[in-house]
Image 1 (cartoon, rainbow, N blue to C red):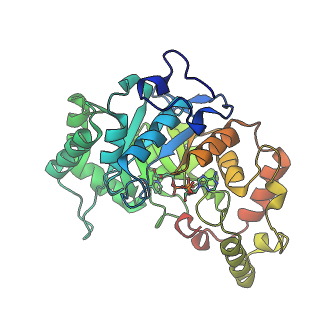
Image 2 (cartoon, helix red, strand yellow):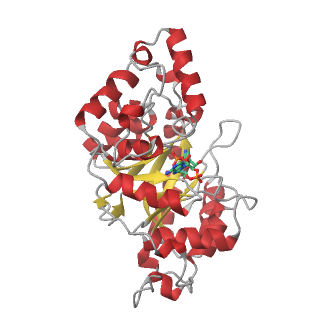
Length: 344
Ligand SMILES: NC(=O)c1ccc[n+]([C@@H]2O[C@H](COP(=O)([O-])OP(=O)(O)OC[C@H]3O[C@@H](n4cnc5c(N)ncnc54)[C@H](OP(=O)(O)O)[C@@H]3O)[C@@H](O)[C@H]2O)c1
């Protein structure tokens, strides 16, 4: 049995000293600067995408244990959104009493109505104020425009730019960011448009190894214009479900995409596995963190064992260069329209 250290985060949260989560050895977290914000973020970030916010998946007590374990393991970057069902409220509950300097919270607002009309400044303000209340914080560290399509940028900023400035001046949030859509922007065209405007400090970018197209557009734009890049959907479904991966590759071969034909039919990605990436999920997170423009990779997990494994994967020695170049030779020779992060 390992007793909590004096001043250890667990001690103040009354986690039983015989908790199995205290027994395994811990990986030391790495941190990277987030663009020019002055924030140093953990290379593994905690994603609260929809499963975290569904009460049928976990109780508040389980969510609290998960979030506090993540913090205790050195995670300091947490991504959430009003659209993730109950996620903001559950996160707020989990963070109650945690010293504010222990975490960086990034949330979002959805800037467009269904009919393609931007939300009003009053609706923006209401969204931000509701997020503040649900999260129980006085300031949101990062406020992102959620799911921004490339052609939404100009109308949304024309409608909301002044209110965004006012909200920042009032201290409601610190840094403005943009979050790509994982559905409708497979060529990552929004971030290269948003980055040169000078309005944004960071971008949330889809960067799965099965569809690494962000490194040809969005990630160079972030690096050039000084935005911090956070990777999302690094793993998705196909890296965890061999049958789904096989179907994707089979369809790609049938379309005549040259990259897919370069992979073996059986266990097509097993050459990515080694002592530092024992599973394809680990390889997915390890791949995303290897890009120099990425400050942190979000992992959406409800499992403390997966959380630990993911930290080990992103803090391991970098993915070897021959693996990186083989991945590019395969997946940059596919059709991004057919490898949308949402479908992976
Ligand atoms: N446009 C947007 O704004 C947008 C869109 C999508 C996502 N996001 C953000 O990005 C975050 C990350 O995205 P995501 O949650 O879809 O992607 P992800 O981290 O790529 O994948 C999460 C899935 O992988 C599983 N998983 C995680 N670690 C694993 C491991 N070590 N072994 C096996 N399975 C593992 C999780 O299930 P288990 O619970 O079983 O671990 C979960 O089903 C979201 O939570 C959200 O905060 C933002």
